[in-house]
Image 1: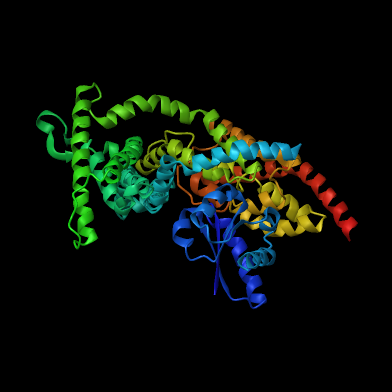
Image 2: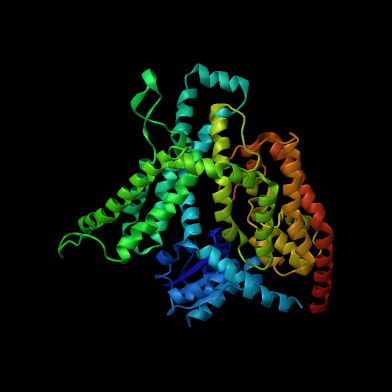
Length: 99
Length: 429
């Protein structure tokens, strides 16, 4: 099962997006783990991730995350999709990244 | 033009934000403080319960003997916060250094160095008690020493680890035991160093390291923190960063805790003791009055959208963002509206929190609003509740006024955006 991990500053607003993504995944019957964490937990939660998504507010940390996990797909979530909490679109983007 | 500006900002602001948020010192202090949250929260609630100024309640808890028990909790938490902080900061600092495997040990050594600076024995002459320790610097007054030691002790300790100046155990000795032994040299060196520091301090007119640090820093620091300009600058910086889509809170928060945590704890102590609170500005202000609804002060804007949007886009966003905004989570609006790099919304986004701060400051200074009690609320505490808990009903009512003001500031700007969105939706339909 794929493990999609989202990081932002505190993991709070991003957990909102995660619930929308989980709903979208359930609807289309796509089995996966989706979770949001604070960037402080990068070292703990990063290694098990199949795909790392960053909230747009921490996009300046992208290089650091990429350097920490060079073999994993890392991307910053599109700002508008994030703000409008478009769970399905973000999930699609994540699936794309893991292909 | 906007793109040029954005490019320029990405070149200048992003590296600065990056450097600040990856600064080991700042991270050690802020993650050390966040480690303290359970202790601070429990202590704050106890202070609140002990200090609640409702006469029948006070006589009730006094009559049944509960008051000293509640007060005791505050005594051992907020009144001794520096003790917890020095360990937590020392450990957090070590977590980022080569000695991270031994971070708990380093935290303990840091605590030891802190205690070394506090002389035993209190009182003088016949009233002297040799076996007592004064707890003065266990509280908020010791926080600055805690921060300084919490950063320097692990750095010194780390030199021993990186240079391999440690007692090596033969292979096969369990790492737990080997770690303990390898800590002996750095701990021994640090002990000698800090005994010397302690003795040197007795030669000064201050007497102890805490008196020295507190004595030197207190006046300039309290001038700095209690100046509204310092606070306003942090607010401005935070929202400016958010305008460029960077998490301003992450960058500003360490400074906020460093400067405004101690004043908040002092207020809590005073509250528990039933004394009047000493500090007007504390970090409690951030969520209670200034960033009400998160960055940009956006509860007003959420209300604009929720009730007055004509376009589908803002109607949808209004539904998504109104509850998070009530809990000071503004990302849906910041990115969804968007406020990021939205020139039109720049003015309200910057002005609203500053104006909220300025007016709250003035009203508190003249005594219309109460001093906030310094309760450390977690992000996500809903508006009104946050006001009520930190400043009673007057603060809660004032939050309503502030939201109304946010609404008034954002409304004209919102109308323009909404009209544009309606036009766009007609075009694409």
